[in-house]
Structure formats: structure tokens, C-alpha cells
Amino acid sequence: DMFGRSSQFDRSLEKATSQLLLEPDWDSVLQINDCIRQGDIQPKYAVAAIRKKLSTDNPHVASFSLQVLESCVKNCGAPIHHEIATKEFMEFLKDLVKVRSDPVKGRILELIQVWSHAFRNEANYKVVQDTYNLMKLEGYQFPVLKESDAMFSAEKAPDWKDGDCCARCRVSFGMVQRKHHCRNCGEVFCSKCSSKNSIIPKFGIEREVRVCEACYEGLNKPTKK
Ligand SMILES: O=P(O)(O)O[C@@H]1[C@H](O)[C@H](OP(=O)(O)O)[C@@H](O)[C@H](O)[C@H]1O
Ligand SMILES: [Zn+2]
Ligand SMILES: [Zn+2]
Image (tube, rainbow, N blue to C red; front, side, top):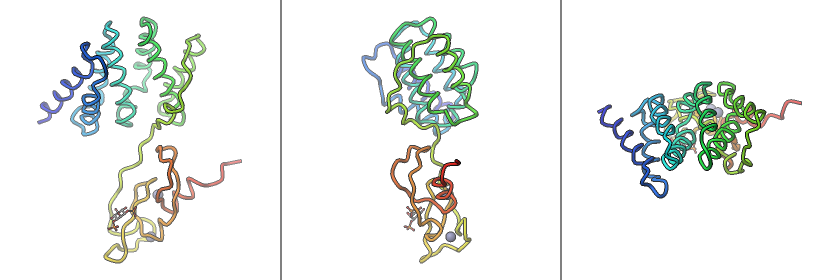
């Protein structure tokens, strides 16, 4: 039942942020991600619970809580991004930086910087970049952005849609006319309308994958002069 699975979240969060841990309990962290992705738990509740853990004075618990937060932002997509990319949450993190010492302080600065980079094209999450820029102006020392961190992309590839005919030319699918999916828009196409490949950096797809005609144009049109 709903309650049972959400208490699963609570149990995993307790385990993942226990002060007795000597290293991250990744199983529990991934369990937390699954709970959120499966909708067992409301993102708002999840972020509030993690935030409470973050507010502890115990540096171990705070560090493990930051790892849970980082993992949720990386792996649970827009519902979590929507909860952390708010003025209120960014102010909370900024206030935490003022009262924490390293390694917790440095870790929070790192996260604000990585998220600012990851959300650089996301108008809805502009408050993250604004917070980062403001803190730089106020003299906070941010660590060098690691290339690997920069690979974290804010957007997730869309789920594949189904259909009994091609989304572009409307030909019906059958034994001969097979279905194919465009990795950029997730729509279903015949082979002729999805015969091209492209990388899709915004989804972190760095190898050539099948895309439809329209998405191929959109992804490869010459940059506006
Ligand atoms: O090979 P089939 O039996 O037609 O199965 C299709 C292929 O696996 C397609 O892969 P592709 O998009 O990489 O072509 C996939 O997009 C479709 O959903 C499947 O129905
Ligand atoms: Zn077609
Ligand atoms: Zn497409």
C-alpha cells in the first residue's frame, strides 16, 4: 500500500544517512531514487525529509544527506528539480553554507555550481544560476567544476510512445512495416521516417542513436549565425 512503500522511503533514508556509516550505503540511496521515480513518495515530501537530515549538526549525517540529495537530483529528473530549483530551497542551502565548515560546506558549494551548470539552459530553474552567480559576487570560493560533474544533464530522454501508425507519414504498422522509436521525441515511426542517427547531448546521449526526420533537422540545423 501507499503508506507501506513510503515508509520504505523513510527506512532507506534513515539507513542512507546513519551516523554509524563509514561509507555511503548506495543500495539505500538507489532504493530512495526508485521510491521517488515509482511515485511511492511525493517529491515534495522526499525533499523535505532530506532537507531535515541536512539540517543536522552531525557532519557525517550531513555529508551522507548531501549524497542522497545529489543522487535524487541526478536520477529522479524534473519532479525533484522542480523542488530544489526554488528561491526558498536555494536560500536554505546558502544559509547552510554560512554555518557549516568543510567538507560539508565545500560539498554544498560544489552542488550549487554543478546544478547551475546542468540547468544553464533551463529557464524554469534560473534561480539556481542566479544563486550561484550571486554567491560568487559575494566572494564564496567555488571548487573547479569537474568535467565528469558537468556531464550531468538536467533533461531526461522522453518515454517512448506507442501507436499503430507512423507519427510522420501515417503508414500502418504490421508484420512487414515495423515500428521504430525516435530517441529525441519518443514518437513511433516507420523505417523511412526514422532512418537517420544523431547524438543528443542534452540527454547525455553521446553516441549516434535513431531519430526521426524532424528531430534530425532540429538537432543538426546549422547554429543561428
Ligand atoms: O524489431 P521489432 O520487432 O520491430 O521491434 C521494434 C524495434 O525494437 C525498435 O527498435 P529501433 O527503434 O531501435 O528500431 C523499437 O523502437 C520498437 O518499439 C520495436 O517494436
Ligand atoms: Zn513514416
Ligand atoms: Zn523525433
